[in-house]
Image (tube, rainbow, N blue to C red; front, side, top):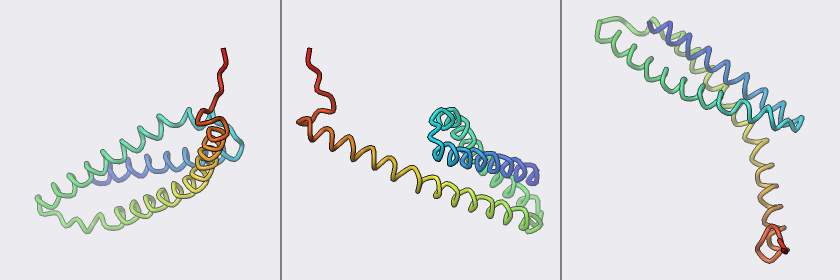
Length: 125
């Protein structure tokens, strides 16, 4: 069962990495629709990974209680940890692209607001 959980997590991590790579490409091409379409999928994948991580911990504890030497799973778990680190680095890359753009828009809104006396739009009826 441990192997199955590790395999499921690995599959979810790879799917999330693919989604993030597509996000990075869509940001470069200013394709906001693609970004928005993947948001729900990414949230679902993140939740699935967190849930599967809990399942993995439970399975390892169960195996230990049954007297199984869980070191037999060491290579699989280490490989999974490597994939999670790759995911973390890829997410940092996405953040390094998104955060400056967010700040630029925030600065623009602040500047426009300051010019218009604290309002973004000057509506006259």
